[in-house]
Image (cartoon, rainbow, N blue to C red; front, side):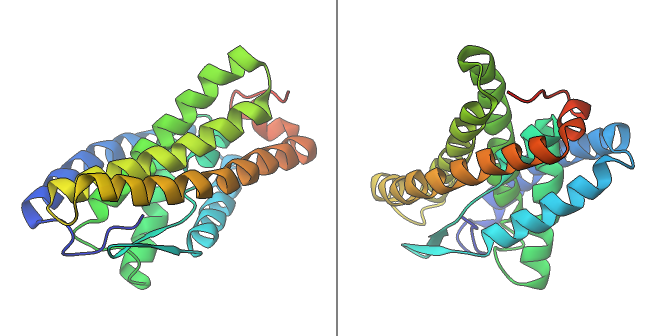
Length: 212
């Protein structure tokens, strides 16, 4: 899902960067107000874990790849979609600058897709479903699936607007792969929340979440 340099024209990439910067500023405000000694280690662990799970890429075709995202997990555990923006921005900066995974000019689009869209879709899907199904883990799993699938479709639309590849084949390729990858992300997200809730229920309570 990482969009490389040259896949999006500079003008369009600048627009995505501007959108990303707005959310980065809001995420930094969240971090300043919400992060404390208890949550900082969790942020570090989540950033390292998300970095690791994103390292496993599957070639989708047309120069793109599919992978897990992690935005829903970060947003749910820390109780805010801005947590996902904050953590995914850190991860994408390291991946793009140090490891060359994803472009620099297109990093704004990648932050928008994985951090902003992934974080907000994941968090609000989770919050909506948790009250309806009354099961934290099921709600987290479904939210994680959507938080993987929807950003992939967004990336497809962005690359269609850029003229990189046609819309329908792009949506089919990215959507199909990430619909399957999303199942893995759903299991990992629900499992991680279960383990953390079992071992440290106080962490979930500190973010406003209560175990099922």
